[in-house]
Image 1 (tube, rainbow, N blue to C red):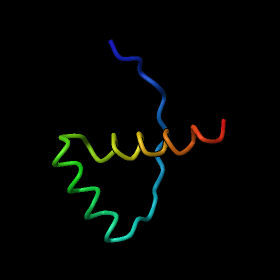
Image 2: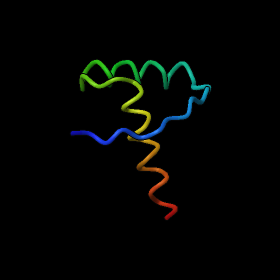
Image 3: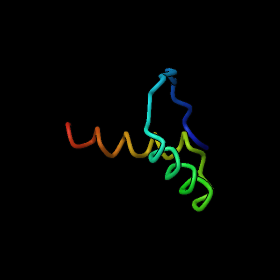
Image 4: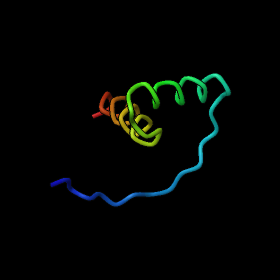
Length: 49
């Protein structure tokens, strides 16, 4: 059973190239774009503990 975490909606701007890569990876890995962004953000923020 997954733990439900509270979410906050954020709007971010990404480049056209980033969007194209995000769409490609999303399809290849069968993950939502949101999942990919959250995993990437978690990995980046973990460096600042």
